[in-house]
Structure formats: C-alpha cells, structure tokens
Length: 329
Image 1 (cartoon, helix red, strand yellow):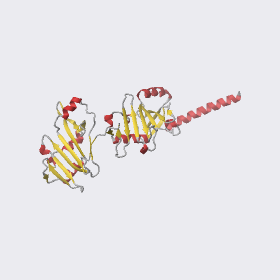
Image 2 (cartoon, one colour):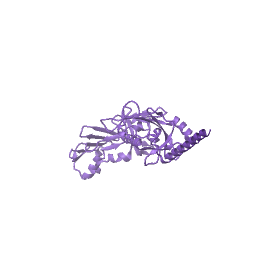
Image 3 (cartoon, one colour):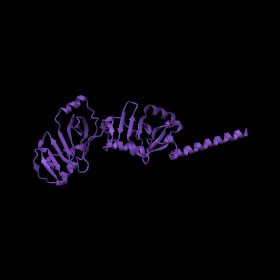
C-alpha cells in the first residue's frame, strides 16, 4: 500500500513539474524540442513550391522558376516578387509564442476548422515538408493561431500562437488566394542599363509627344512626335525622365469594371500611349485612359491597357510624371 502511495505521489510530482516546465516554455516561447511547434523552414532557398487554399474554393499555386527571378502563379502568370519574398521571410522567421491556453483552446480549434487557410510548403518531391493551417489573429492582434502538419507525424492536435521574430502583428493577411492580388503588376521592367528607348504619345495633342533614346554608352537624344531630332536644354532632366521608365508598376488587376465597361475602354482611343524598348529587343506597350467621374477625370486613378489586352487600375501619382509634355524638356 505504501509503495503504491509513493508511486502515486511521484507521478503527481512529475505531472506538476512537467506542467511548470511547459508553462515556463510557453512564457519564453522556447518550444524547440516540440515537433508539433516546429513551424519554421531553416533553408528557404530549397523551397520550390507553395500551395495556398482557403475554405471558399480559392487557391494559389506558386512555383519557383529557374530562368527568372519571378515565381509562376497557377502555371499561367508571373507572381509578385514582393509577395513571394514575404512568404519566404515568414517561413524562416516564424516563431512560436506558446500553445493556446486551455480556456481558449476549444474556440480556437473550431475557428481553425472553419476559417483556416492551408499552406503547403514543398522542397522538391510531391509531398509537402510542412503544412500550415493559418487561422485568425489573437485578440491583441500580436499573434496568429496556427496548427502544423508534418510528414510521418500527421496534423498536430495542439494549436499555437505564432508571430515573426522581432516584429509584432498577425500573419494571416500574407496568405491570400485571390489570383489578381498575386499577379505581377509590372508594366516596364528594364534593370540596369538595359533601357534603350522611351516613346510617349499624347493622342489629343500630338505636339506634346516625344521619344528619348539612349546608346549603350548612356548618351541620350530627344525627338518630337514626328521623329525630328531636338537639342536638349536640360540633359539631367531628360535623363531623369528616361530612367523613370526602367521599373514601373500599376496598382491592381481589380479594376471594378463590368465586362461591357472594359470592352468600351478597349474600343476608345487612349489618352496616352507609352512604348518602351530595351537593347535586347524586348519591348512593352501600355495605353492610358482617363477614369471619368461626374466632375471630370479622377484625380487619383486612371485605367491602363496592358500588352495582353487587360484593363488595369493605375495610380496617377505613379503615372503622371511619365506623361510630361515635350515642352517640359
């Protein structure tokens, strides 16, 4: 009887000590020995595929491309580099703040079951090395509820509160599935000294149109809309205008137009046309249209037409400097 009592006491003490250690680890966020909390990816350079899915049927498949600095999206488009870079940063810098407290655990699990986004992370092969189930933010908005699934271990029954090292905030907004949000928004992309020629056409007032050309040595020339070579009054200003076209992005593919509205724009003469060429023969064309309001042209946005025939939304803050008139030079 005494022997059994001693064993019972020892078991109680061990349980208490284990609980204390767990709570201490929770307070410190030190859960490195808990495989259910091993969310991070130590070498993100090996990540070659990311799949994100929500419970509304939305999905985004991101795959690393070997011949470009951009990832591909759903095997069809280029993905935004800033967004893929942010995911890789999240994979490497994620840390566990602790398990969800017992009082909240049931509620968090139910919410995860109904709203979590599934994030599969691949490093070669057809099986993800880790799968995250990303839930909502904590009430304080300083962490995110997540569950981990790993090969051979299955899905953890324990939800955790996670965050990024050195930062405060939640992570769920990084894992979106809207294809239009993921798509690369570059209009012109001519890095380094690859830009060779820029033409801006003012359709309503052709005398404002111009072309700026550069040779491989960086010497520039200026022509009017008829192709007549002009003398340059301010070389630095013309050079700065030329360099503005090296890297330009529009705002969004979400233009908030109906199909008939988009088709109407396509059948309209644009206000401006920009044609940009590189020394490698690459060229990009982009048309701009006024976004009309009841009081006239919108002061913040215009519509753009890509080379692929898609209507996009552009910020005038970005594009107004690109459509300066010839007399400004």
